Length: 458
Ligand code: NAD
Ligand code: UGA
Image (cartoon, rainbow, N blue to C red; front, side, top):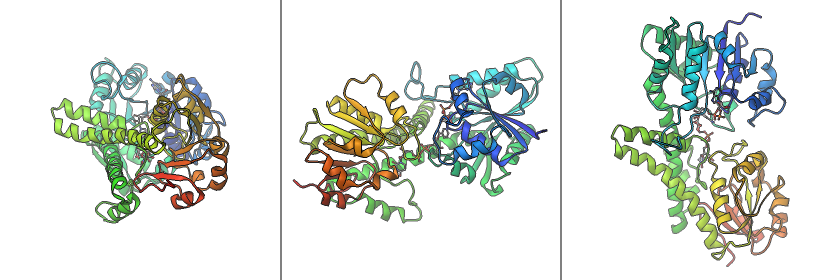
C-alpha cells in the first residue's frame, strides 16, 4: 500500500508508544513507525503484553499494528525512510556535574540529533515531543546543519500534555495541541504539515501555534502550575490537621470560585510521577542560569512542600502509633504514583517505604499493576518487605494500612473482614482520602486522613 506520509518516532516509551499509536489509529493514510534502542521494549510492543499499562491502549495497538503502525529497532533505516520524525526520548534530571539534581540531562536527545544528521538522505521535519529546556531547538538545529550535505531540516516543538492513566482519552480529545515553529517561510510550512496531521481528529480551534520558544517553555510552565496547585492544597491540609478544618470542604469552597477552578485540588500524600519534579527543577535551573533567583526560589518551594508532605505523612504515622514502628507490620495499599498506571517513577510510595524500613517496620506492598516496578524500586533495601496482589491477604496480621495510590478497588473493599484479620489496635492512614473514614472508625479502625481531624478510639 502507498502511504501519504512516513512518520517516525524515536523513543517507544510512555509518550512515544501511545501518541504514535493514536496518530496511526486516526490516520490510516500514514505509515507510522516507532523505534527504540531497547530491543526488549520493542519486542513487548510487538507482543500481546505491552510494556506499559494504559486503559484503552491494547485495543488501539491491536487495531493498527501491522496495518500502518510498526515497532522496530532499525533506527538508521527508519530515519532514512521517513519525512517527519518525532523525538520522544527520555530527558531525566541530570545527576552528575554542572546542574546535578536540577538541569535536564540531554545526552539521549543529543545522540538522537547526531544520528538523524548522520542517517538522513532527504529533507525532514523534526518534532520535539520530549519535554525540554527552553532554547533546546537551537541546539538541535545547530547539530543538524553542521554537516556539509544539502539536506534541509525544520525543527518544531510539539510538547505532549497527556497524563498517565488517561493517556488515550487525553490523546483522543486533547484540551489543546501546541505547535511551536520558527517564523520563517520554511518553519511555517513545516508547522502547517504538523497541524494537518492533528487536524485528522482534533478540532482546528484546539490546535494552537506559537513561536518555538513559547512552546518549549509552556510545557514546563503547565506542569509547574499543576504541581503548584497540589503543593498549595497540601500546605493547607497540614493546617487543617491542626485546626479541625476539613481539606475536602476547603478545597470545594475554593474550587467553586470559577477563577480558581476545581481540578488538581485533591490533597494527597504528595505528587509523584516522572515529570513534575524533573520539570520544575529544570525551570528552577533555567531561572537561576538567567540570574532570576527570586523566580527560581518561588518554584523550588513547590518541590520543597512536596518533599515535606511525604515526611509529614511518615511522622504522623510514627506519632499515631505510639512513637515506635519497630517490628510493626504495615501494609501499603498501592505503589503506583497514581491510579490506572503501573508506573512508579518518583512515586511517594518509594520514599515512604524507605522511611518506614528505616524505622524498622515490616512492609507488605500490594498494587494491581505496579508490583514488578515496586520490586525494582526497593531492590537491595535492607529490611523485611513482601509483595502480594490481594489486598485482603496483604493486610492480614498487619498493624496498619497506608493508602499510597487512589485505586478505585481500595474504596470498595470489605473493611470489616480486613479489620477482623488485622492486629489491634488497627490503624488506617489514608494518603489519598478515598476511603469512608466515618465508617472505618465505626468498624473499629483508628483513622488518619490527609487534612482532616483524625478519628481515634483512644
Ligand atoms: P520513557 O523513558 O518511557 O521512554 C523513552 C524511550 O526513549 C525509552 O524507551 C528509551 O529506551 C528510548 N531512547 C533513549 N535514547 C534513545 C535513542 N538514542 N534512540 C532510540 N531510543 C532511545 O520516557 P517517557 O515517559 O515516554 O518520556 C519521554 C519524554 O516525554 C520526556 O521528555 C518526558 O518528560 C516527556 N513527557 C512524558 C510524559 C509521561 O506521562 N510520561 C508526558 C508528557 C511528556
Ligand atoms: C502530568 C500532567 O498532568 C500531564 O499534563 C503532563 O503531560 C505529564 O505530567 C508529564 O509531563 O509527564 P502525570 O504525571 O501522568 O501527568 O499525572 P497527573 O494526573 O498530573 O498526576 C501527577 C501526580 O499528582 C500524581 O501522583 C497524582 O496522584 C498527584 N495529584 C494529582 C494529586 O496529588 N492531587 C491532585 O489533585 C492531582
